[in-house]
Image (tube, rainbow, N blue to C red):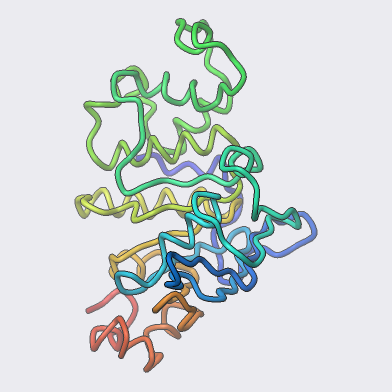
Length: 270
């Protein structure tokens, strides 16, 4: 995978790159209930541009439900604002048009189409199907940039269906980049990946994270230790702890509820 920093002039950093022009996502008093059960319970989060935030917690903690609420897939109460604009109550497609994108554990790509065609479709809202699928004489600059960022330039004419597992995930991230998403919510992006693919995915997140708000729902603690700039721990739908990797690992509540004795290990070690 390429080491380009074309889409990110600054690396992700603890606290993000707060400033007057920075993007941010602010969640306040967010709750999601299913038949009387509170899957997300009065959650507050502030997610700044440039802060590569990992969202961790045991199964059933509410991580994916929280992402579903932010993207409009489940009804919720409270407040979700993106750079001051209220998202709660908006339709899924309108939230996406405001620059909030997400991936799922299984990559959602058009397997019969090439890498380039997948990116072209993602970039082509408003164009006809014929325009999207016809052979282009040139490639849009944002697609070239995305290809370079995700490291798939050499595979641009390869059908997405024969890509390796990790490459499909990178393509899906690239599809969000060409849509100019400034908030990316990634659900277990390294699940099922090889060690090499996980390393390359982490480096990709660093490249794109400096200029965006990136939230990673993750169970892989080694991956979290290696690449997170900050961590939020959910348990029973509530925020249990928040801070740096070292702070979260040292928190007795987190050790008891989720990380266990391995949490006491230094960052990057077991």
